[in-house]
Amino acid sequence: MIDLKLLQKDFDATATSLKRKKVDSELIDLLKNADETLKHAKTVYEHTQAKQNELSRLFGQAKKEGKSTDELKVQVDANKILLNELLDAQRIAEETLESIAMRVPNLPDADVPDGADEEDNIEIKKVLPLSEFTFTPKEHWELAEQNEWIDFEKGVKLAKSRFSVVLGMGARLERALINFMLDFNRERGFMEVSVPMLVNRRALEGTGQLPKFEDDLFKIEGEELFLIPTAEVPLTNLYQDEILSSAELPIKMSGYTSCFRKEAGSGGRDVRGMIRQHQFHKVELVAITRADQSDAVFEEMVACASDLLSALGLPHRLVTLCTGDLGFGAAKTVDLEVWLPGQNTYREISSVSNTRDFQARRAKIRYKEEGKNLLAHTLNGSSLAVGRTMVAIMENFQQEDGSIIIPAVLQKYL
RNA sequence: GGACAGCUGGCCGAGUGGUCGAAGGCGCACGCCUGGAACGCGUGUAAAGGGCAACCUUUCUAGGGUUCGAAUCCCUAGCUGUCCGCCA
Image 1 (cartoon, rainbow, N blue to C red):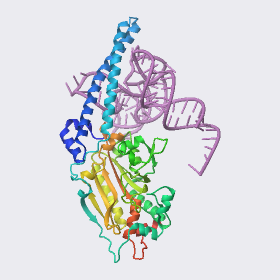
Image 2: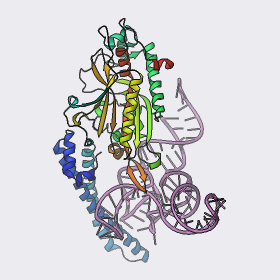
Image 3: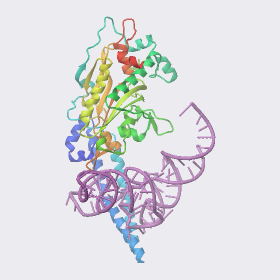
Image 4: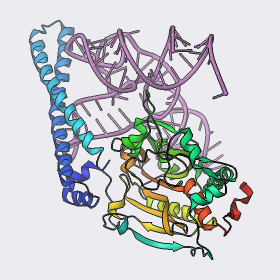
């Protein structure tokens, strides 16, 4: 949630900033008005409540002294009717504000480039030269089937389209990658955490997936539980509603989970292969930091993911997302795109975001500094999407006969 | 799934209708004491919102109810514990 005080104090700047992220200016006005309405309703209610408290105190006193309470009773009853009306008004104002505010995205950082969509993202740098081939490289689904690493039909049989079964060396490689990534991250100071893959509504609201993106989530019937779309949700919400001490920050975590996404609205994109699946594995990085630490930790996380790709020998590039491509909760995002020779293009394999205090405000993640409670900053980044890493390994290290050379760093994990 | 018990501040814990945001303890902070420390002594120590401030409002798991007035009484839900059942 954005800072509503900032909106009131500096409406023009905040509104301009939100418009960069394609927020309707009508919604911004609505938000401002709802905030003011609530503030007013609260003030009036509180004055009336104070009066009621005072009358009740007098009532008790009169009773004790044996005086008549008839006259007070008339006053107190009349005030109570008013009080109830004001309380209702306040509640409506609260609900209105909440429903608007929870759907307003985070403000982009000032240095995030303007832009409409991914076309306007800005490349920071390329890492590692592109693999060279003396033959026409194949796409990963062809290689996966040829090597019998992935069975796409069996996934459909067991569940439905966009599910697959990984077998043999493919399955072993998957497991090796997960272990390699977790170890790599741990060496960089990210503590390994194993979390639930089902979470409640509160957690998803905390990180911003709800209320706006309910259609993208798998929900458990008859329970208020959802399959997580990313480990960011459980990892970040680990500290939901907590007041941390300044000294224990930054908290840096790494966790492996399966992720589940409905991919509603992805249309016919990437139906083939394992680029876009309903269920996929991912190792995630999450950090909770003080406000003054988040920029540095952000760079650490980007470096961690990039170095991981380099260790695997995968050519990739770093891209700063423009305002139009920035996610709901992100103030700033750097995507890592891996080179896929079969597809002859770079594809996203990791996305590192600083949400600043946006998630912390929703999830109530705070830290104490000099006696004051301040909102923490939260960051998240993939490190990496396992399926897409498999795809990259297949396409980059394929041989003319279709066999695949597995990166040396993974040997000890196999 | 069934029965019973519980849920109070950072933690433990007292508190069954009014002056209780809440005794006491632990922890923490500061001061005194000390060569330095421990011990001891003293003081302070929940959060959110509004206001320049005095101060006001809210919060004793959550929601609803009774009442002039609820941490306290009633109902519902959640969670925790114990026992029973079932089961990887």
